[in-house]
Length: 102
Image (cartoon, rainbow, N blue to C red; front, top):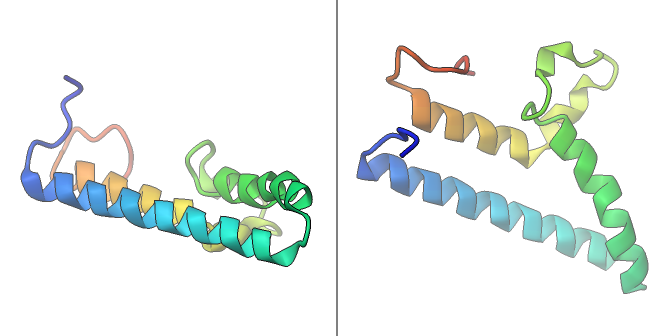
């Protein structure tokens, strides 16, 4: 319906990347949960740790537009690497790609 790549290999690579990023999200949750003894504090601080990683992943804003002094944060984000993998998976052989390949 939205003209995604039709091959089975690209589908399974998409599935693998989403599975791996879900494992990374679970590990972040376990890490923050193990740092604090109170579950309310851990669940309250988890968005403060994860949201900057999402913001600096390049999904909402171009990474080149970020200030240089905070740009190093993008390399800690597993969402950055999953976004790059999914974009390359979908548009690797498409000359009319709506995004630039990273």
